[in-house]
Length: 324
Image 1 (cartoon, helix red, strand yellow):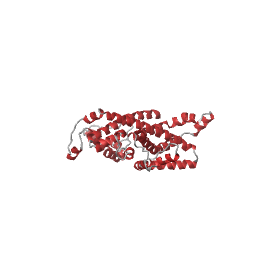
Image 2 (cartoon, rainbow, N blue to C red):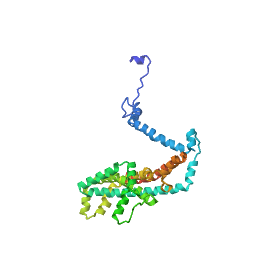
Image 3 (tube, rainbow, N blue to C red):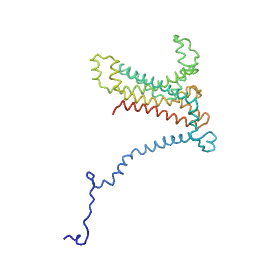
Image 4 (cartoon, rainbow, N blue to C red):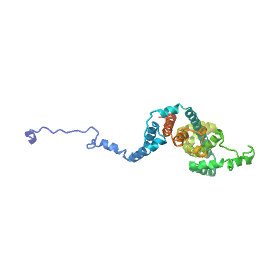
């Protein structure tokens, strides 16, 4: 008889691990899963510090009465939703909001239309013309926004601008000597739109060109054999194939054009009147122009909310275009 049994010791209890789980790994599953996220921890912390904290601070300021006095005295006056009530009850807010959406729609539509035309042109011209056109697009794309705004300000200057000189020299459009492009809202927004589209087209054109190059040439050959023309090929093959990419570019362009600030601010000599205000400029003017930081922060929050509502629609359309 076994000596352990004789001593009155009961049978040993053995823990059997679950089927399929190697012994020794059960206790370390959770920590090892957390290790997967360790490489992205620095980027996440940087995101929280650099973006999260300012966002929280702006939201907090939007619920405060903060002017120059409160800022100097380091006092905090909470007023709840008063800033938002003041904004939403102000007819100026609705006028500026409509202007912002109209401006965004016009710029996005022109950017995508011209970008698509340039992308198709890059595939239709010879190699050397394609190279020259690509270099010109890269130079326009690489020009800083501030620099491009100053250049356009010089180009459309009423006294020394090249545009007035060229139009007058041609003679077809009459005398443009001393014509001011920044006296009326329509001509001013024309120059601003021209600047924005000029800098935005290269990215859109190169992106769409890359998407077109991924389309199999067999599809085009089959369409030509069937007698399809250029427009039919574009409508039935090219555009449906690059539609997901097109939706992404539309989404990005809407975000960029909705928050345009530098171009308007520089072209109008840092003193734009209210007829040229967009939501971003109005927020800046209320914050740093008349030192109503609480109201300016509230305008910024409302602007972000509107942008999120609009872009959520585009995201749904983009996901629908991509498919399951």
